[in-house]
Length: 184
Ligand code: IMP
Image (cartoon, rainbow, N blue to C red; front, side, top):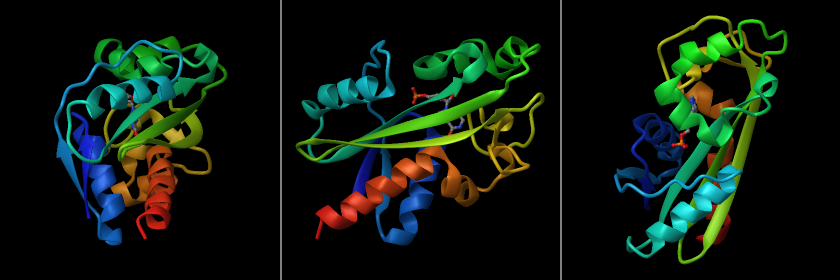
């Protein structure tokens, strides 16, 4: 089976490919820019994107909308994570947290799959924002996110390790389990 992943983010593609490879599913990137609306939740952003794409792409596809939610910043950057990464960047986030005693944060991922109907799968991972960057793997905020129970950031993990515990890995797991049940 082949699955189109609509995204411009190569880091996300790499993770989905690695996840599905052992399951005999080939994920391929389909670059198709779609509007990301301003909304309060990742689910709304993902749902709107799928609705817009469904009229323009033949066949099944999925996309991922994700974000970093920092407790001391009341959930910011959340749905604005991509924009904040491009503008403030990691250094900007570290500066905002300079005096913060509470460095807890979580990543959330919403995978939206379209097969004529919409199916949503979510995953979350809790952790904390480190005070400095560590590691060179992954993408985005990975160098400063240390999942709870681990002494390394996501950027210090292999893709397989990150997938086992990450928000996206968890959403991909729910997605793949659903596919197994529903594509019998
Ligand atoms: P979007 O899903 O394209 O709206 O982008 C989400 C943004 O959140 C990305 O550009 C990253 O900055 C950040 N992000 C989402 N998932 C991850 C992850 O697994 N690691 C690091 N940063 C992430």
